[in-house]
Length: 625
Image 1 (cartoon, rainbow, N blue to C red):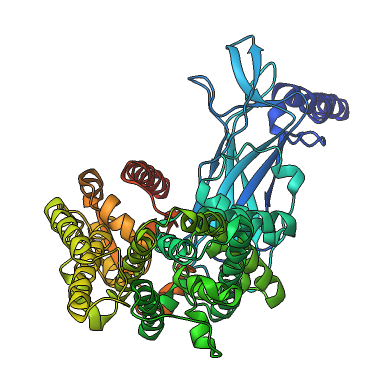
Image 2 (spheres, helix red, strand yellow):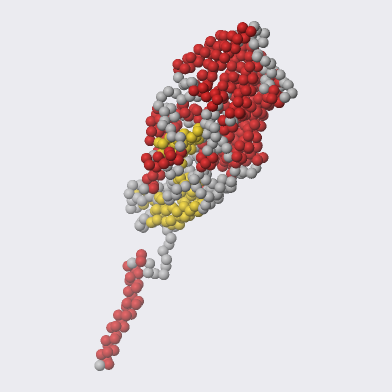
């Protein structure tokens, strides 16, 4: 019995030895993917996220970089890739206060794969770029972006199942009072982001970017160039006849003295801009709104009317001791009079707040360096005054024309008509003088009547004579003629600023109500920040927003007009970072901004912008579904 028991135990011992030694080896050989060995699998991909700024302020644009490192011997499909393959993609998060732009995928390398043929792939290290903007509504607190990288890793023999890697990027959101610095520049240099638009160059990407990045020499150069561009905008046009009148009616002085007088005249503009720029920016107000003050408009108009009457010979303005009369001095009074008129011209030019000036004012408002702010505004105004140096220098040559008969009196009378017309142009926006604006029209019959008034006024005005030295009856005739001529000129100048007859947008004048309607009707929103003293705003109204194609295209938008003529809404000013006008913003009801315009845009370009906004909004909406 014992022998039998030992014999029976032997097969059991053999079986146990087989199970514990041979079977695991075979199992591991047959099912290597179950990772029953002690060796861990090799990581195929690693991913890291970076942003281009160390701090981000609300309203600031920035860039995101996703750096993908691929293990040696492996590759992933590029984006785009051939049909049938799974491309590498980034899934963007749904962040209420961040608007993402078009993802920039790098170009892939061509690879000839035996099983599928030619394909575009990524290997080694690739960087994916994402432009973004932090909206004005963002709160001052840290934000975390949770993105996903979707890919399929392959080698020369096989492709693994598609996988997803999570990418977490922290963002330090700070107030506009803090400055930010560029970071990770070596990473972002290799990303082919689209070239910024002109607005971005003049705004955050250009001047503000140079200021925040410490490139002061570049910032001053851009500010000077911005001033030159501003001098060509419509709101500066009223200064041209005034400048010509001041220097053109001067006694013959020659090129050199005319040049020096013009420089002094421009210095008056420069000083006014420098002082007002720093003062107004420090309060966060819109710079051009100084022209909405009835007392300021009245003061300027009084000076202009006084100059015009002196041109007609009603009285002579000479250089007395008081500062007031020095400001009113024309030509022969010399450099003090030129400087005084320059300061007045600087106030007249205040509404010309283009993108460059808006960026400078925004920077001045966020820095404690009033010295730097002063010199930035000084440089800007100097660039804007370059045009008037040229005009003033050569306007003096008019006085050297032959003076046979009353030729010089004709010039003085025409200049006087131009100056008083400008005074009425400014007064029309004051409530007391509202009738001046109410009858203005932008139509050919209206302009025909205006031309008739000018012709009749010139015939009755006895331009070859001045008021001094003519009979009382002739003075009445001359005064009536000049008044009719001024009225006709005002009808043309003011009428051109009115919208042409035709289709118009259905404006909403309440921003909260408009956003509520946009949510209910699932529509996009266009905000138009407007003021009567803003020349580019008026151009947008009567050239762009009255165009039938633009009106038809904006039928599906909630169009909101916010009038900043008298005073600005502080809440809206901070919410949308309004530092100057015009400003047109395209956004959705949730506050995501798709486009911001800070200059005049004609109808054709506006149509392209609207189409891009609709496409971007549709893409953003599809990502959230």
